[in-house]
Image 1 (cartoon, helix red, strand yellow):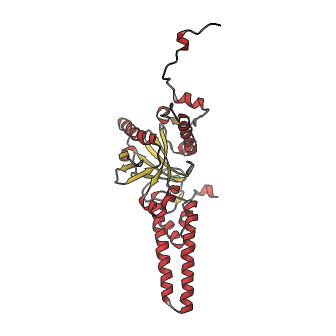
Image 2: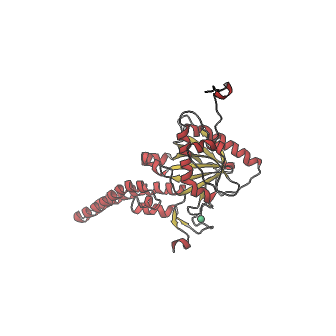
Image 3: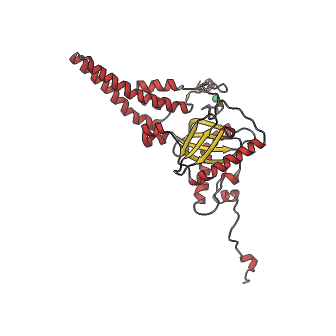
Length: 314
Ligand SMILES: [Zn+2]
């Protein structure tokens, strides 16, 4: 038996791991039709939890892969992916923790823009998406309480919670680097609003105030169409937007306001007293009105598919 030379037995303290090698080690692969910047996409390749981090990011990428294949333009590269929860004070106040169920968002940072996909808790996409050009971002920072805020050029502000600490640290830098690259390349893309809504069917940018896609002809619900449904019966608007969990919760409210109105109408007829009817109508208008206002607020945030293009519905 021959003993190994010192050079063969020497193990360096730090081994340079590449994302490609790490993906292979875990038997993971990425979609061939998409260009990924692996170095920035997988920042954690060593230390505690690197395997879990890599697996989670690949899983998120797989979930939104069909949307990326559909929406990325030529030369566009995926730079980073992370998942958070959009925060709204009004929704948190009126819906409590249930607001999280309708605000799960996967962020995909590319070399020219941010893509945001509404998803369920596991990162599976729903039909609402947005895009933000880096040139539309005024300020992006992580707060002490774990929230991240995004100030946009048009004055709007987005708040997110639920990002991993690593994402909160890395994303501002990636935004800045991407924006510098974007400026250096002289790229000038147009948008109709800082947070541009995307067609739920073909992911084309939809100009502000438009609900029918000029590219694929898909139709989307207007906030008013959704809100009046919620006024007639709370939960109807949530069903229309595909928020099943919220719809089931609100169903109880709807049954209560309608039952109260029917009972008050019965008492008004029985006692020939219009006061009962006024009480019933007041409760109905306040309860269902508040729900309609909240539903309208939610509906305004993104587009919700009403009708697919004609060739797919026949
Ligand atoms: Zn479309």
